[in-house]
Image (cartoon, rainbow, N blue to C red; front, side, top):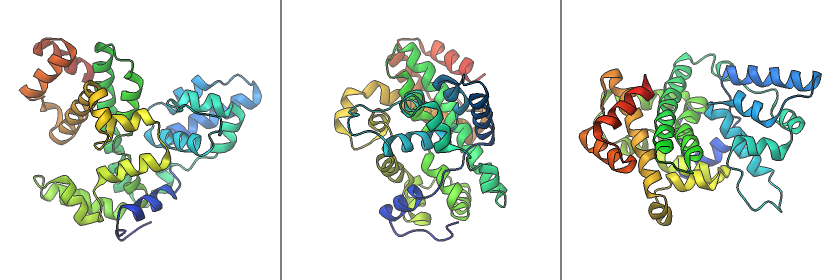
Length: 282
């Protein structure tokens, strides 16, 4: 476990991409069960594996990074879903590549506060993923699946910090609570020598996460800011609402500006937008 901050962005990316990614216990258990079914019956397909991985951002990272490392030279298109990655790998090779899986609770059994921090951050990602999926479906958006995955994977740098540098992650959490009004990037730079947002974009690039996901989140991609402007805004709004809900609890509500922007993007009245959000989070 890393106890001291690394010097810069490059060092952090090298370190985190070299570490094993533990997964949620339910994911490991379900995949072990499917592997057993495949041995006995040979009836497992890519869709069943995708359902088992579900909303586990850590396992999703493992699959996408593995797919990128092992993509064939002739493959010119992105593997942008877990199902597609499994289809390309094959069922047997998938299980041989990934099982047995490191389990989060075992990896961090001596750091219960880190386990709690990871689950708290994942709950926020789940909330954002539910919201942006509903927004995208109403928007009749062909990028709905990519938006859902982008929301799910948002914050993966912080998840990995809890996994591999829990003491630093705990220090960062305590500093946030002590000074909630300090700019996040400045506080992260002070504690870690790097801000989490640029670290996350570097990790996404170094792991070779699907280009559509990167275009939805990269602040330096000027072309995508134009071509994917509505999608990027829907994602930002979903992430903002999810963060506020985590911080303020069930009483948190969208601001009037947020409601009006969503109203414009979704062509709904502001009361209808509020009902949509309430129903999605109920």
